[in-house]
Length: 192
Image 1 (cartoon, rainbow, N blue to C red):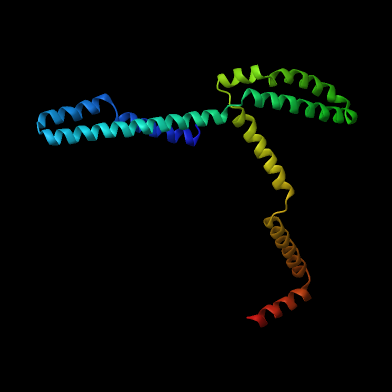
Image 2 (image 1 turned 180 degrees about the vertical axis):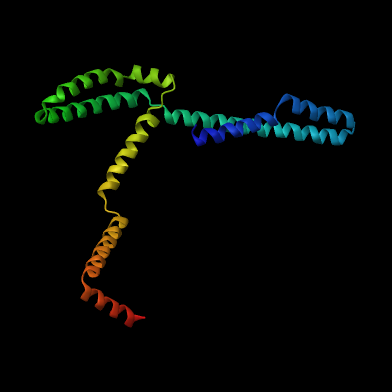
């Protein structure tokens, strides 16, 4: 479960426990037994204020749930936009690949089969069944692109590793040459 949903669920459970009928009845029963009018009125006011505050919190939580669900849902206009723009891109990629590879006929068949899946009706049905396109497709695609970009950018770690490997190679070369090893030994003993 999404951490945001977990947090909202815990807040909702906490508010529900505070507002359980048994809890309110017990508090009112205790006040009736006391029979102190001013204290009873003050406690009743406190109970009412707590209930109003908890109602506001529950409404805020409900709005947050709704916002989270709306953020995960792809609108009909978005599906139409995606369909209108992604299918032609796929067709262009397939056509360019088919010039180089005769095995792309199978890919064209797959595209023809996939096109109806990218319809407003299909996406709506899948979302009603609980499928989250943004999580299922968007996040892995984002990770894939991010990893591709990171793999192309040289990192400081790789440059450092290359330098360390070069140093190790030089040390092994020095170790193989007795004269060079003796000179290195005399240099390091002078520095100490």
